Length: 162
Image (tube, rainbow, N blue to C red; front, side, top):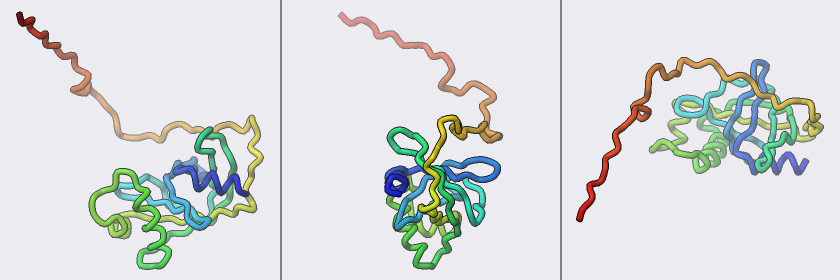
């Protein structure tokens, strides 16, 4: 499946399909494995089951390329795989928190390894299949009042000199 592996290696985001909803996840692709980090200060993801379906989209058109079953396992600190994952994730992380990323991830986050079964990829997305969109997850975050930037301001007039 060269199209699927190309889409996984080029795109920074894949979609992890669970029973309740589909989660977008930033990832890095290394040796036929997608590594994902989540937790404190990172992207929100629930604990992943042993098997999930990955929805892969083309980076340029965002069209669905495939749905792929993937085996999932937690990458534990102080293992050779942890070093591989941390070495790949750290330079790809946008807006990193200062300090040792790998140590912070070991203390406060979870790194998942998702190994797709490329031979079982379903690349036959029907046109009427739908986009898979869902309602946003309810959140307590809200704005009850005007933000200071919304308040009208007086514009200062420049005095004419002359």
